[in-house]
Length: 161
Image 1: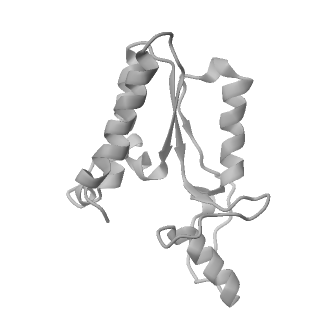
Image 2 (image 1 turned 90 degrees about the horizontal axis):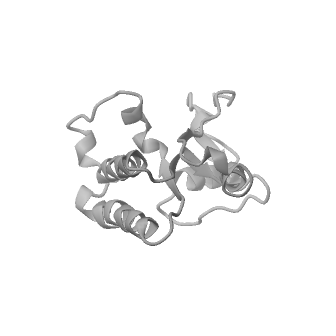
């Protein structure tokens, strides 16, 4: 896991710059994509000493708080909290890199014809195209919902056994 210092630039300073740009000239809508790693904080759970070791989740939490502050000051800003993003349901495409554990686990399991036994909760795994459709709809057809936050989880998802 990388330290907070490694995530400050892309997640915190990057969000700051997006907010700065959005405030220049005429108002611009801000659609912030986040991840499920920050969700426990939003459910009321605090950060533990162990959590502080993982800079990514802390940096995403700080960036989301910046979005909340901007909205408090009048910006039209939404946060979309994604769970684990899986391969496209339409064509099966996904990132083929060593850092994407979930997709590599699924691809490896398909290659081997086996899957580890676990009580994995799949409500936190959604295909990329499934996640993009509601955002593009809000951006283009339902702009009155900009300014709301969204958590994308599937409560009907099966459990792997």
